[in-house]
Image (tube, rainbow, N blue to C red):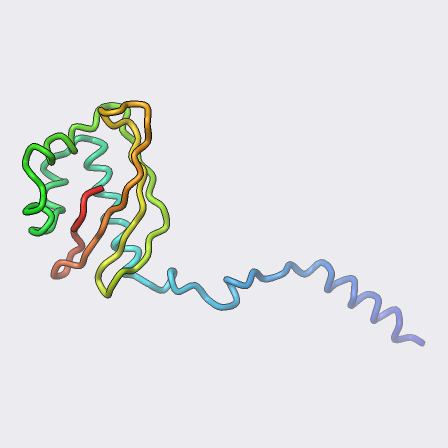
Length: 136
């Protein structure tokens, strides 16, 4: 009967071992995806340029296609965000190899000033760099 105390101690010890979340057991493909991180960083830099009204940086980050599908006036208006500008980037997803979409919410737009604007931004691989293929 000496095995009962040992079994009781073992059972108590197992109760205090933290459970490993299932996402940790399977491994996260997002953590291993360097492309996702690079695309997310590009989205963040672009929206920071929007927030700080840095027209030059923002324009340099656009693909040729994005530049062709928008007017200079629209770009000028877009990069005139104002002092209360802020943004949120939500979890993105891969559309194709070298292309990601990130839902975004922009705050502090000139019109209307009090309402958040939900949209998405598309980031594509352009040579060795990532670029903005669709403005929010």
